Length: 320
Ligand SMILES: NC(=O)c1ccc[n+]([C@@H]2O[C@H](COP(=O)([O-])OP(=O)(O)OC[C@H]3O[C@@H](n4cnc5c(N)ncnc54)[C@H](O)[C@@H]3O)[C@@H](O)[C@H]2O)c1
Image (tube, rainbow, N blue to C red; front, side):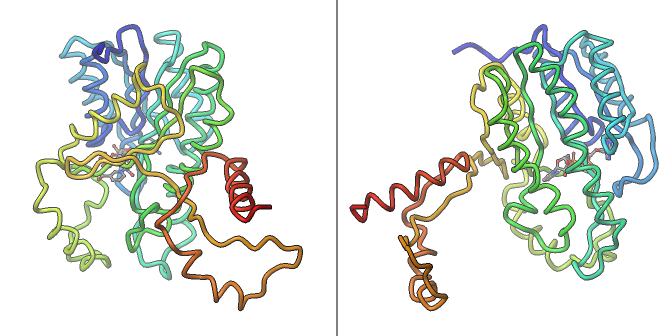
């Protein structure tokens, strides 16, 4: 099996100054990629700016002999996203890999989140992915090759308390991946990563001041047993596979937590089929709810049409 190598390829990493972004950049560069290290800098909430985060990564990459440039635009606007991709095109003439990784957090109990808390997190995580991936995708379609990697979070797909804005914005990326993957031409693949790592600035508020302290303490108790596997390098290994030529899978979701790598998927239980012509009553639903809930048999539709196939399967099972 050939080793993964990014020689001749150009990678854009947003939020490159953070714990994960810098680990992604280092591993991509070590394997030959030219890097655009984007980072707005500023506070974990997304306020303020600083060139220091992107510059620090670029210094490390250049010291290691890699080609790298810094970019300080925000992913939160369409103009910022375009400028990030334009930076890659003007420096290197192409863009092969985009890791949409920039992130902020404004945590709080659902009832207390302000409109600003919601909008700023959606702007960076959900709209930010559109802003950066759209101009990159156009270029990838033109050149017939591309790897898009969306960095999501278990906070939405599985749920973590006190992150309704963040968790829902991150889960939007699953829908974005599904649709782009189905529209994309051969050669352009898009996948989603669910990372877990320590060392990020997100969540830097002292525990004593956080409303979610009890939840975090419980998570801390559990995580003590797999601390080694929480190094950003564990995530970078998966991200670099997903960004590689060798990764021909598209519309896949992979999770890494504490050294365990898994595929994540959306399943549909075999369920209960009501063939009509009259609609069932809510009493019928109640009578069959255990069957509808039963996860022992399930399908994994990869498109809306795939879900229709599961209905045809249920009809066939009834001899219809
Ligand atoms: N660390 C984890 O365990 C974990 C778990 C799940 C998901 N994630 C996600 O992984 C990504 C990286 O997380 P991290 O732990 O490295 O966090 P981090 O805070 O260390 O890095 C995020 C970086 O994004 C930058 N950024 C914020 N807003 C930006 C904007 N508008 N434009 C450009 N850059 C911006 C920040 O300056 C920061 O350097 C985030 O999207 C985060 O939500 C992380």
